[in-house]
Length: 221
Ligand SMILES: N[C@@H](CCC(=O)N[C@@H](CS)C(=O)NCC(=O)O)C(=O)O
Image (cartoon, rainbow, N blue to C red; front, side, top):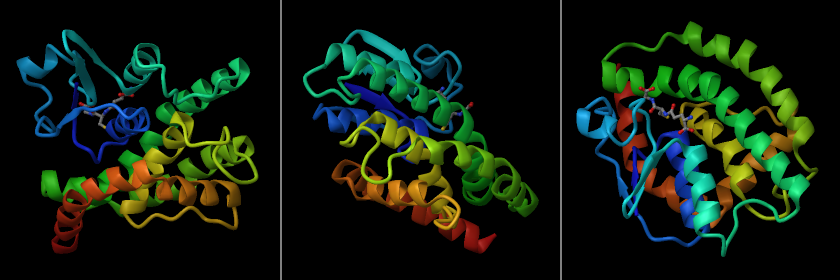
């Protein structure tokens, strides 16, 4: 199996955590980003986005599609709860987090502060960052706070909903952002818990060299 994309992408991290939780062997092909608009890669991922995934002859893209495929093809260790109602809630949280948190947390904070100076050699626009932190993120976190348990993982043990909620916030935290535990105590505790999961620790450790390079570029800009 091959997973295409840089490990610091929130969506690649989510797909990767699914593979790791399931105990599946895969190769991470991380040289593809930012060169995702080549004809070769567009044949795998028509929108030129990461992640994409190959399992033998089967090729697909989009972290949600990849997770669905893995759940169906490799059900021995599921990453969603067994209860049907909980599985629906898991899918909703995955959808909400994937479509709502990427913009303000990953693009508005992480990319603005970290990848823009490194990849585009342009300075950060702190106005964009402040707008994300002060205006865009709070209502999203307010909602997620209502969906989280008082403690522990969302459905008792670490699953795909947990990393879906946490993954874009992990990117923002690389750029100095912290979840205000006073405002969102459950979200803050949940993020801390997800970051201690061994699979997430392994993924984040492999992200560290690239994050260090981005941090150095940011300091130099
Ligand atoms: N819905 C997609 C979103 C993937 C996505 O937006 N990936 C970003 C990187 S984190 C990307 O490839 N951006 C490049 C582009 O949009 O051209 C998924 O869940 O995989």
